[in-house]
Image (cartoon, rainbow, N blue to C red; front, side, top):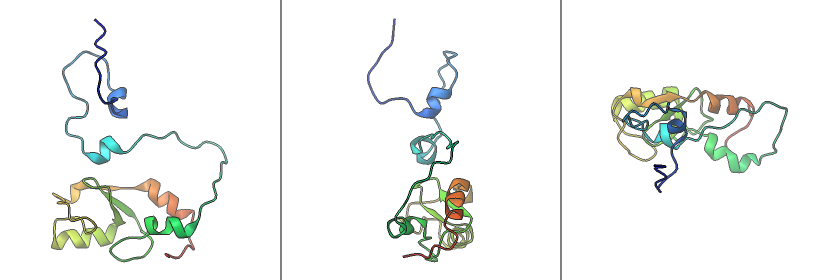
Length: 129
C-alpha cells in the first residue's frame, strides 16, 4: 500500500523527521513560527540585490519605539518583531503583542531573530522612513 493520500504538503520539519513508522506527529506542539517560517538555503556566494529602502524600512522599524529594530525578538504566536528592550518592557505591563493584540503567554514565546539582526547590520546608517 502506497498511502499517497491527498492534502497539504508536509512541513519542512516533518520532512526532516525520521521514517521510523511511529505515530508521533512532527508538527505537534509547534506554533506558526515553527511551521510557517520556510527553511531557506544559505547564500554561499557574493550575490547582491538592490532594494528600495523606502519600501523596506517599515519592516525594519520597531512598532513600539519607531526606530530600527535593535536586538530583534520575534513573538512566536504572530511573528511580529520588536527591539528586545521594547517588547520586554511591554510584556511586563500587558501579556499581548503590541502590534496585533494577540495573547503572548510568557517571555518564553519570544525568540531572538539573529538573521533579522544580520539583515539590519547591512543598513547601519539607514534612517526609518
